[in-house]
Image (cartoon, rainbow, N blue to C red; front, side, top):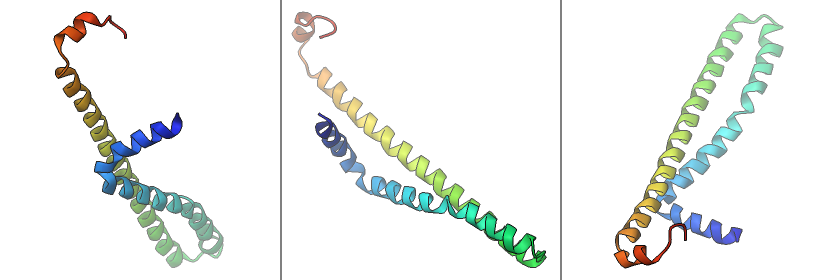
Length: 116
């Protein structure tokens, strides 16, 4: 049952294969960037604040800001891309259902009870 469902979902993804791969790559990059921030903050506290090295603290703070900016942009593009191709997949499915309904003869709706 589940493998059939996954196969159907994968068939829907095929037209958006490049976008799907890009989304997976972005997810992996984001997942590696997320734990870097706490370690970097720990490094700043242990080395720059304790030693009171203002120049190094300023430099590392700028690096931390750049890291946060990069992570935010990557997360934004990840969310945008996944939402875009998922909405297009839903649109394609709805379009196929609508086309199928438009080509069914009217007698089908007369003979078939509602809900079956």
